Image: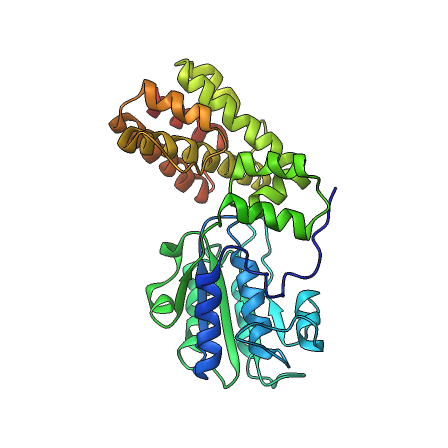
Length: 336
């Protein structure tokens, strides 16, 4: 088990995201900071890190060249998640969503004066886990926010955010960095040895967040194993083994989340294969480059695209709480 040092709010905090840091710095320097910002990108790309970096930048006592100092009282409390004026909203319930009750509490709280700064900053990780009614409640205050209130959202699927919210926000795309950037992060911020770091980079390339979870969480490693088994079954045209690699014995919120993760891993492997078919080479984003190469040799670009579409359709079914066994069976039927 390893731990991340608390120095993510430093001049090196946004590893491989110089463009994001530049945009945030320009916002701060301009004096026209938007009251709503959306960080959009894949899981593990660093959206929440960017959100906290921006929060620290807005209230830092000694920012330098558009970067929070990382050592003042404001920065250190943001880094430790204990700042009274930087509130991270909580999801609840079986489906882990932002409820209407939570939105009502926040829309009332944002009219109360800040405790220790001139701003109140609300961070909503994974905001796509919010129904339309709850988003509409928050929209009312986003349209005419009280002075000093700032709303920061992170999303993997921006299409699930109301257009009326998106139109009032600045959206910043967050992408994983390079493998070299990931290696530097592991060296400077964790106590994983070089071999462990290389293992994570081999699987997740420049996606630091997913690499960390892979090394620290046994479930992540199992998810990769399931994805590799599913790809190998696909290569052998073995529908039974493909279904077995995906199937969970229980139908719970946790099992659906695990299946989404495995499907995401498979989709990236297939996407790499489709790119190889088009260009004969790829900057791999998937965790199984050899599998991608084999898929490209076996299937046409049309078939690979159809597989990607089927996977995405399965993820949508999971979002509507469809039984996991039905989802995996339907996916196997679609593909085979």
